[in-house]
Length: 232
Ligand SMILES: *Cc1c(COP(=O)(O)O)cnc(C)c1O
Image (cartoon, rainbow, N blue to C red; front, side, top):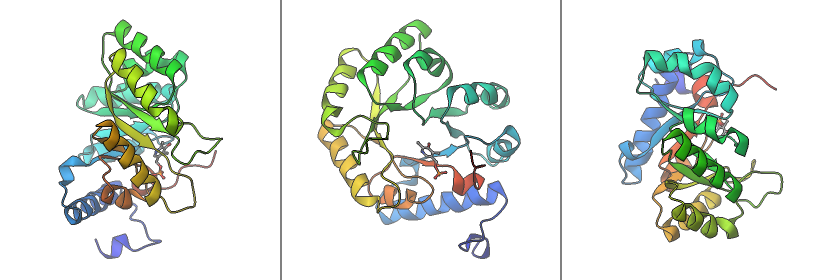
């Protein structure tokens, strides 16, 4: 494992990468006096096909993330038929007109960020007869080009969710690129605490260890598991 996890020499085999990330999660969790069982590793498989996903399933991975409803609809029904206990998480922006499709397919939605989407999701959950837990995505760096609920509007969105009984698991963020993520993770953790929420979806390939130290309960890891995505 030592040679295989040297920087710039990522192991090619998906099962080896998975084992390396799982052991990192265990090490960081124990360093933070947390249990590794309290950290869910979401394997973000967007852009990757069934032939790349299957080895991870074979290696025991059960939780996967996708960022597009259509792509997930194309890929996952077949994979799930073989392994029914797979849990599928939506980690990308969601249009209200896709809410019903998302509710039918996904087990958790990480991108609830506005009132109109909340209303659409509530309607879809009623119609499909399925309660899908959601994370409220917070625009933690106040970036104009990025999705996520503005920090100041999070309490009212959460209040609205409670009123229409959409289950909220916690808060999610994607911090600004190319700067230290830790302060943003700490801020998200503080907001969750103040709202009495326990779920924290934060940390990606480059910073999931930092995120776990700051309380992440869900890390969303793509590249470190699958290798680079094809450039769009
Ligand atoms: C793609 C994506 C990830 C995974 O990113 P990596 O850097 O490849 O680990 C995590 N979260 C979201 C919201 C994403 O879109």
